[in-house]
Every structure is written in C-alpha cells, then in structure tokens.
Image 1 (tube, rainbow, N blue to C red):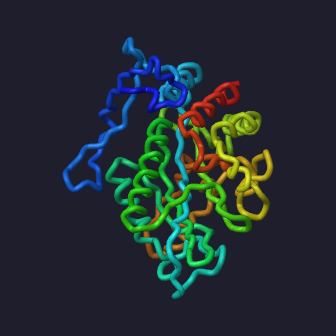
Image 2: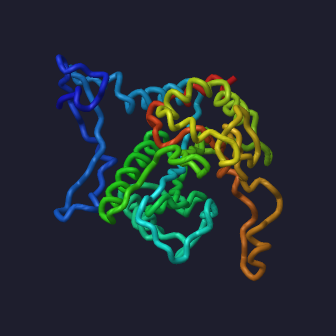
Image 3: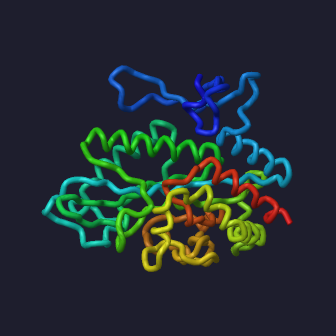
Length: 329
C-alpha cells in the first residue's frame, strides 16, 4: 500500500508498506446495507518489520517498556466532547450554557448520542455513559448543542482505538441526519469549548495502585508530578491546533493552571471523587434495599484535562508512558 498517502512523513519515492489487519479489532459496520467487516490495521516496512514511525507502534513500544521496567500497566478512559450543529428549533430551548445533563425536550440530539453509543458498543467500545454537556447556544439560524460520551478504563492501545472509532461513528451519524458534528476545541468566545479529558490509572498485578489505605497513594502522586513536569511537551501531542489554546481560558471549566487538585476543574490534573469515604451513600439513598459495603477503591483515577479533539491520541498516550520514571522512583 502507498505509505505516502497514509502518513505525511513518508516520501513517495519509497512508500510501499504492508498493511496487516488486527483481528481483535474487527467489527460489523453498523451503516452499510451489505454486511461489511471493518478492521483496524498495523503497518510494516518493506522487510516485514513494524513501521518504527507509526504512531500505533510507538505507543505499543512505550507500553511494553513501561510493563518491563516497572511492572505497571497504565490504563486510560476518554471523555469525548463534541458539538452537534443544526438548524435552530424555537420550542423548549435550554438556557444558554446550562445544558449539563439536560434531557429532552430541552436537548434536541439525545437520540443521535444514544444511537452513537449503541453503534460504538457494537463495535467493541466500552462505554461508561453519555450525557448532554454545558455548551448550548444559537448563532443566527444555527443551534449548537454539546454532548459527551465517556468510556471505561482499558489498556492504552484499546482506549485509543475506541476513541478513533467513536469519532468516525459520530461523523457518519451526523451525515445521516444532515447535521454537523465538531470536535473543535473552541467554536466561539464566551461559550464552552470541547476537551478530550482522559482519565488514567496505574495497575499492578491486576490491582489499582492509585489508592493506599483509602487515600491517594504516593505512586499516584508521583505520576501526577510527571504530568505536571512534562506538561509543556505534552501539548505538542494533545493540543495541535491554534484553537486549542482559545479553550484554555478562565470560567469555562478548562485548565488554566499547571497544578493538580481534588475535584478542581481549572487545574491540569484533577483527582475526581473515588468513593474512598466510609459513608455508604448507596445504602443511604436506598434504605429499603440491600446495599454492599463500599468497595470502590479500584475505580480511582486521575484526569488529564489539557487535551482536546485535535490530539494525536497514540503519540499523546505514548508520551504519558514517560511518567514511568516518576512512578517507579
């Protein structure tokens, strides 16, 4: 196959590549009339060796190095934010910039999000949930409605693949419904931008090591320190469009400080609630039901909030694996 048409860094004078399907990624295309199997591929050079410059292979090598040198596995889960752009409807409009977890009829494109989630799941995506997001506004005859689909933690290569497939499915559905979907970091000033927040957690021997005795572990804190230390370089992979930096402004739940904090959405690295307290909220909310004791420590993650839809997701996750030096010291 012509590698110069696949990668900008391959010259046409010597561009032949082998493209080999990865069987585990195969899924039935949810849109074709004739049953069709779609599949993600790996790339190999003329000698049948993995293409060293392929972003997918760079991530695979970095992941292997982390496991071999530290015994840790880094897992990730993405939060894919996007806008649906359609003609304006005047009935039951949501309040400007108040669309977070809104329901129909105030949100108009819940059915597209639900259909997308079903198609993503059928394609192998591991979805946590989906919901409408903060952003909703009007410009002329157009309506802009923000949504989000969140995934579950999984190995990095699978996390990257799921995000790529999800973006393709959303774009295909937008075409089907005659609307536009945008993953742009910022559409206009004064309105919520779209990020690609990615939660991460370190695993060892199948156990989440982010929590120690109910508190954030030293290993997790060292990993956070790595995020902060490498943050200037990470933007090379997580924010590759000038509009990326229009998103990073105060009062729009975007990171404006290279620091970390509990629950704080203005920091680069947020530590979300992790069910680490001793209060059994499930039992309190459902007093007539049998509720298990708290056992949610394995769910603790830390969220990198700097990236957006322009990110080169494979190279970004590969760069994160440089954190192994921080976490293993």
